[in-house]
Image (cartoon, rainbow, N blue to C red; front, side, top):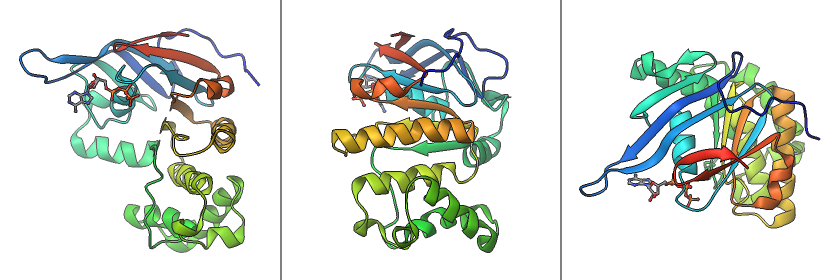
Length: 238
Ligand SMILES: Nc1ncnc2c1ncn2[C@@H]1O[C@H](COP(=O)(O)OP(=O)(O)OP(=O)(O)O)[C@@H](O)[C@H]1O
């Protein structure tokens, strides 16, 4: 279902994620390579924005800047209303942990932990109470479609799609304002890929995350509220 979300790329007040005129260059011999060229984007809570575009066009760079993993050479990135350039490294790390959920292509799950423990490890890292977190971990895994038996399985006993569901539940566990997803279906067949994108649309609405989904797969774009295309480091409406 497409919802009535303003289609402007201009940063709006109330957006959970904004990029304003963001430029990113990588060193490349004598001439720096411009991976992001004056990119602006605003994503509202509960909105799913898909970014398509050819290989090497800058999609992963966009996610890395939004995740505050790379600092732009120019422009501004705000997350949950905070200007990330004005933060110390420590504050940025805390912001990333607490407000940003990241889902990469491969579900980077720890082989020795059960699905439930993958989520609880996040609590442990943050110094939270594992006992209280257990109920929430169970609920989240249930909500992404893992029943009680599967929640007790280690990754090698889960399917690729189920592993990606655990990955999504883990990214949601801390209650992020922003969810950044890079090619989540690249290791899945088409039908499983579609179901994972359906799930992303669903969690975006239920958890009110500002979600950016990078995908090569044009067939998956129909689930997004907005589709943008990256070409040579520039972002445009599809
Ligand atoms: N660490 C780096 N150092 C130098 N150049 C880089 C680096 N990372 C990416 N690039 C270059 O920046 C450009 C954008 O790369 P990016 O990975 O963002 O593209 P992409 O659209 O995500 O590609 P793909 O769909 O193949 O993953 C490409 O020309 C790439 O070669």
